[in-house]
Image (cartoon, rainbow, N blue to C red; front, side, top):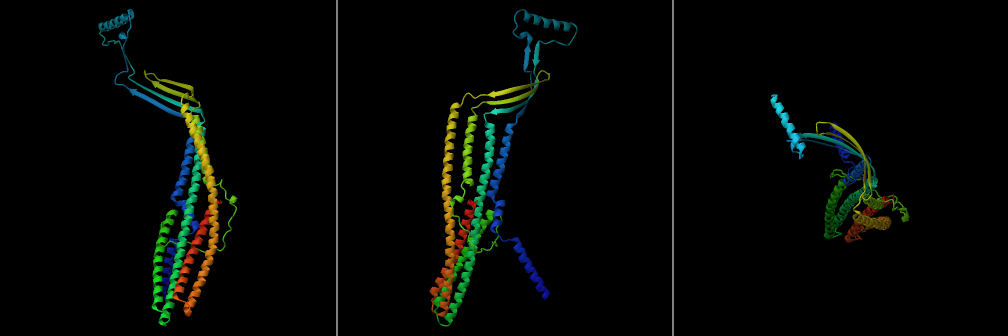
Length: 455
């Protein structure tokens, strides 16, 4: 019997350890690491960087010679050249001489019993083949090749900045969602505590009713409050499930009903808040850098447009092979290719004006963004300062609500307090606990946002 109990206990412990191993406790750091590895938005931004790097590698090949092979062969049903030499439009004695010559030769062949008959027709080019190898080394291409490579490098910088912004936004969303789930779980604990308090109140009220000290109205009010708490508990569970699914989606992990988060402990020490806005860098933020890159992009596009109107110079070699008259022919050529555009200046002038307006627009947007970021820094700092003050206030309110409930319970048990006062004290305690939980979440998210901008 003792062995059976021991085996049963070991099995229960093993099952508990296995379940705990299958569903580890999620911490904020583990969620952030998982999001960096599995979140679709972050992964897509990382792939954009890889794509931009491949584009840069493609542009490097524009510095090298551009070579190509062109081959052509043909076979005709009839010769392409079919000429009767006696009918070539020759005049006078030459034409008569050719006709007499062919007639004489054919008579001699006939007299010698030869089967060969000479024809005055000449047939050429029944088939032929040609191949050409050509290579051109760009020497000066109006600055377009250099500018294109700079644009490709700019594309890498833009992709990396967008990756940084995407990662920051996703991690901020993960942080807020994590604390939302943690706060709802904390509120679940508060509701469970309220259920225990109501059970205690119900026991006290029932005991007082049995001794004839109170009426059934007190018991009914407690039961109504219990039903209200049960409804809130159901809504809270639905909220936890929905927020938990969102968190698992953001971090790329499967959702389970037994989702566990790190214990939501109270802050032992609130970090000091910086009051000097100059400590928050604007120039170092990716939003400002991205608009600076946009300004560079418009300047590069202007250079490309201008390069279309400049001369293009290239050095090249060409080698070829041909066989048209059953004779192989191989030759090679070295050449200089110079192209000077003579038209299109009117269209280009309007393009340059367009780029000038776009550059001015980019400068204006950059200036406007810096002003908005100043306001955002003030807003983030104010929110953090406010969250610290609210955290202290709601902590003090929670402590007062706990003391108020303790006094109300003592008065009701002593018969000097009413059920109304006790229920109000319980409601105030539940409200204060939830408000304190919200304040803690607000402080953590505000601190995270401030730290992100103050890197």
